[in-house]
Length: 187
Ligand SMILES: C[S@@+](CC[C@H](N)C(=O)[O-])C[C@H]1O[C@@H](n2cnc3c(N)ncnc32)[C@H](O)[C@@H]1O
Image (cartoon, rainbow, N blue to C red; front, side):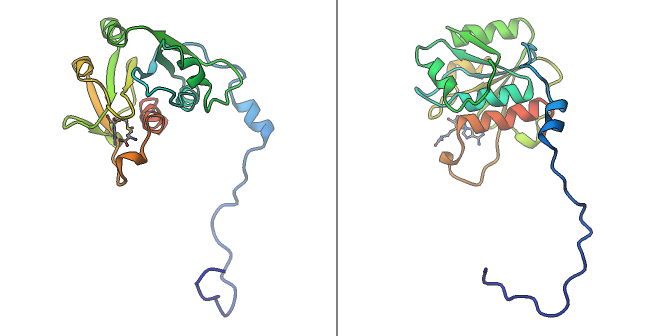
């Protein structure tokens, strides 16, 4: 038992809180999409400079959850990194690029907005980030070095996640997932 003293006297009146009933597996199955979504060309998570051997599967799952695509560089170790932490039973929407800066430039040319997840004076706080009304790329930097300087001019804006912990308390997959949910308008 915890350090708190046990209450004496009559039992408290029953709580007015609603009785919570979780959804059954059948209800969940009926309310969910039976197949993986196709490429919606609306939201892109782009960890274009991933740390070697990073877990990319967790971010891929978030992409599936919010209807986003994932863009990754074509390094030999990336397919294995996509498997790490990935419990999806069906393939998700993955785009490959050999040239991160060129890929970002092409997305801007075809009218996509490019938002970086980064610590910067110009950054908006996560809670102030509106849902994406136009096709948007969310750019993630390297786990330790962030978004490289040569890519900063290709960003239309930057979002920062307020933290009370140390730098080590946030990883790229979690940072990307938080921002993706906001951009998708689900949070
Ligand atoms: C998510 S962090 C991981 C930080 C790393 N674990 C560390 O110990 O510094 C990866 C990159 O995102 C950026 N970043 C760090 N904290 C951030 C925050 N609170 N909001 C937005 N971007 C952040 C930095 O550029 C950092 O290099």
